[in-house]
Image (cartoon, rainbow, N blue to C red):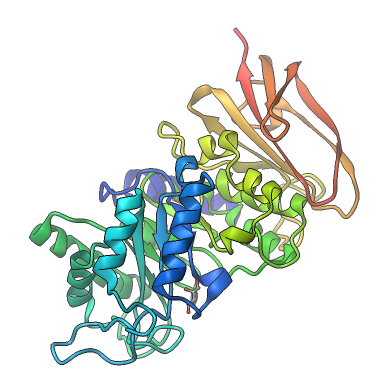
Length: 400
Ligand code: GAL
């Protein structure tokens, strides 16, 4: 099954992706939902943006500030336009996007391709063109389109979400402005089959939660559909939970590394001001971000060796452990290992297992979390004492 998926996806992910010119590499930034849900307002958004800038997140590449559900009212105005909740956003959206742009950020907004949003506010089904015009007029750069309350639509999910692609294309013809299009489809979970043609990113699984099992469930799913993701069109593993729940530092490191190297969007969803320095250091690791934001190689890392399970095993609590992919060119290979065991283990693999390593070449290996060179290796690689739920990430550089 997974081999079949991988083959088909190579075509979908690269050759036919919707290149709307907006964002070649995965989007990075902040989203309100995971931490604040409906408790949002313009002060929170402004303060978060200031913190993102002052704490170095903007400089590290996190340049979208995205407002999720609960910003609008339940009804439209007399001309059919969406209405901002004036108690939460009294200065209005144009004011807010001007502020965000002034700091150097881009701005994102949320809607839903159904009658109401998931929290019960006015949805966009059958109003796509009006809403796309409104969002451009308000100065937004990014739109996330959700999936609730869509049962009345006669047609496929692809047709339903393509109405937004068409609206954005039309508004681009009118104004010159194209938005990043992030879509959320969680009924059939087959968006990777059709969304690369119509959107910049698509969710691949149920909502993330700040616990290890949900992270392994999402990663297991992602491990089979890497070929669908490439420049301008990415699998979305959902927003980051770093800083939330009871994720240990090892788990935060694994979560972040896996999302980054699967080339998922990286949208932080926590109270930035409460992040520990360790968590900040994880989220801003430049050597990991450089792989996520590679402008030469669009393909994500993919599993080459499942480790404990036989290769190709579907296991939501124990996904594939060894992943690889090229970085920058075909002389650099990124390798990731995650320890899903409940105990400390060693890792090792032979080069011939990975399609991204040449079995008879020697490689200089750099550890991207310890930020140190480990030496030159041939034939196989070994590293010792990987703590439970922790990760290792390396760049292998082919030697002449
Ligand atoms: C869910 C979506 C979440 C969040 C929420 C808002 O459907 O997956 O990411 O946007 O709706 O109500």
